[in-house]
Image (tube, rainbow, N blue to C red; front, side, top):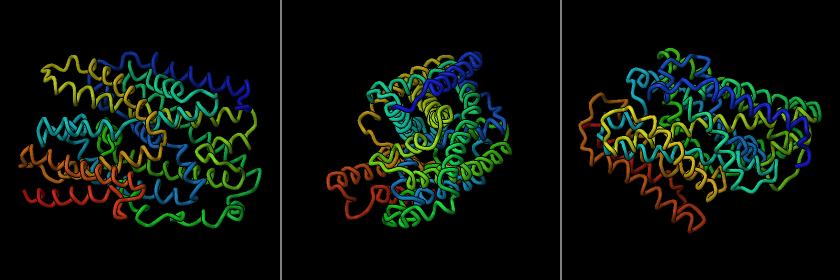
Length: 457
């Protein structure tokens, strides 16, 4: 990496020092209780809500650049539009109920409605569904590209640096660092567009320079493929990051307004990244499209400005890693270990969450090393696990009392997951979707049949 100048190094190191200082030394006293550690005492303000939700959503930023470089505006139709739709539904239907019920987490809600075993099973799925592995991989690949590290070392550094301040301050540390990272991610991509615009002209001129296939919504893929990504956006309904922010908000009003404002900022950032991806199509040639944003930055940005752009990318990825690692650590430590051990007092719960932080980080590094593809990790995990948990969660929002046996609920969770998993395995063996059907669909079909059956009970 020959363009990382001494000035860029100073900027990068300054960013690291500031983040560690704010995350650790300014938040040491924020972990007195479990609710304080994980939900910031349920007093999250509107500004903190927006900053931490917006930044957490873009950990796969390199994959967005890769997809735009390969398929053009299709990226907006699979990674942007569906999420606006489901986020709006979440705003008006789910968020108010979460804040009023005052559960700690999705497994906590499952435990209340379905029983202890169902709560633990949902927690296991959430641990993998919310795994920071795809984003640890993103940051590891970034460090590998910039500094020539081997992948194992890059993944380890990414994990340690991104979660170090979570240990002491919990969610409070994340909110404080996300306020800085929110500014950096937008600023970095504004700079990249400004210099690209100056080099080859406005976005209108840009459209004349890229292949016409990049302007098709499908990007050359099948409608079924596009629809799978659309339905995967239903992930939003069971996204533990959304749940945590809404549970931590000062009020229902803060949660609803925060979500609406977040959708607006997502729309702006999606436009920025889409334009940068299209500029990279026009300006660079590479057989490594995952690095298209970085290569565009190398091509158009001067010394110093390039360093600012890199910390914008780092901020985007790190803000996702720390949030998801805390959520997974809480899920593993409290929703699984604490309840399996059947501990009566919550005095040791933070200790178990910190133990979960270590275990989850280790598992995520292994997952990232074994499946070194951000898109494959995201797609595989979502296709297999979402069918097992989304409809059981929605039923808890529709009905105040649910008269189902715990065994029936466990079957409802497990059977769709097993169907999608088996379908996925056979599809991988055949190297194409089994019977031309993506694994997500049969699992969701099975779950929907359970949903119709149980809705009447």
